[in-house]
Image (cartoon, rainbow, N blue to C red; front, side, top):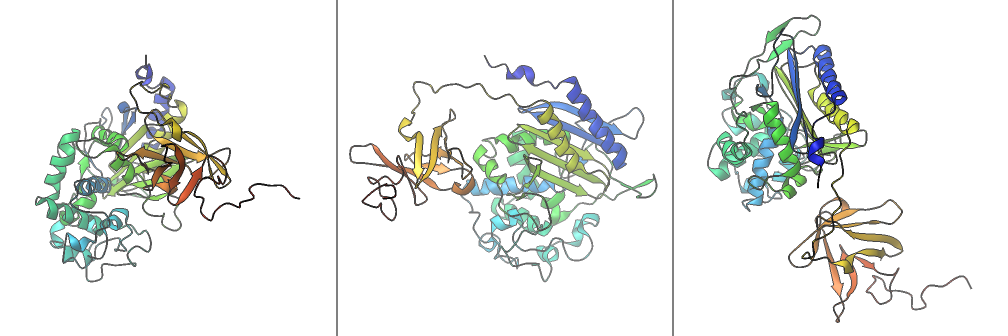
Length: 461
């Protein structure tokens, strides 16, 4: 019997460490309020808040503005279009949204911020001015939309996500927010996520940098820039969304597609320690722990959401101050506190069922030239390929209906592994991206590229 469910509740010491961390964050960050949540194994296992108002604190149902976490929601909509076959990520924008003046940029480049577009809109700061000042895409992009050659580097671009939101509207024939509600928010049960604030919600505040006083920030409708940062949400909704970003949901996006979003599609910006950017998701590391998610900020609000696939832990932090409280950093630390204090229990080992197809002929040692490799078949039906007793390329492969296997990660992501058979049906060798893997080093009976010396192996005469 699987007893993992008994361990979902956090230990008292872990809960105190989480409370202490957000108490320090609220105090040192001088935030009017902060609210946080932690998800483990798909369940919210902890919620907490701190506030400057005596006897009152926000809970997981109070809305805060989430800024650029909105971009991840927009990216989900674009990936849905891709999965439905309505576009390819390699398509130039012009093919689906003509006349923008930035049509040479591909959809993948827009998702990963490698399209070379400027970071911000021309004119007044879009985050603190009404969206009706920019009624057309030409107002968002300006006369010179590019800061870099498309594809040459990672350069974060808010206007790029306006283009993606307009792309969604063009292909769906509906406003971006309506599409988001119907295709993501309602299926996932995110009924406290919206384009406009809904009570109860926090007010946004600017705290003076040198005095303990504050003033309210304006709450603007961002208009065309909405797909880059408009949304309001709660820690409970974002906790559910974070779990979706780990597991997928066939009503919205498959596990494979959200895994693709979490995979690096752009190198980090020079001078930054992050791991780069996926498709609508930031990638970073805390020590050896790899995290995917997004930070967010708009005047009056900061937000952070991170997921750790290896630990099956996610955290969300929201605060209502323009600066001072590093919400994304605190969220990453909440993940670390839980994952380090209460390491994930491994799933129980279970053998295959008798009815399962088990390709044992592929398992065991293989050789790429003289490099010893091993293939293992895991209980989830995937193949693992990696070096024996050394560092090197490792990968996992998913089976296909035609008997081939498709790489899911690393160097071999997207590449096809194929078992090549002899006339009698036995496996001669494995073919992977032109590499030949044989049962013996440089097996003379296999088509080793370049051939094998006819004298075979020998010592020094």
